[in-house]
Image (tube, rainbow, N blue to C red; front, side):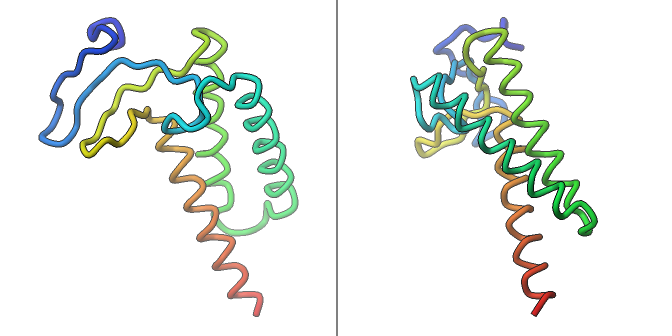
Length: 126
């Protein structure tokens, strides 16, 4: 797919979704662009915090789901960074939303699910 769309081109996939070929040197959804060292440190710290939280709470129901989503998304983006020096983003939504990829979706949903599980466990502990 990547080679079938030249950088800068857009192709309609669905009424509100275009396929693009862009390079992202920042984190998910293009945040912190151009800070390769900063992004590497941020991802490393986030993964260490995730592993520490998971290790302390591994018996909680469903905690493996957001952990796997976050780990999978982060590793997918890290592999792109190592191979290409940047992440390939290929999904573009309307209204100026920055292009993103499925690893970004996995990371975002993993964070949301993790917050819901943490909030639920806090309410259950009360």
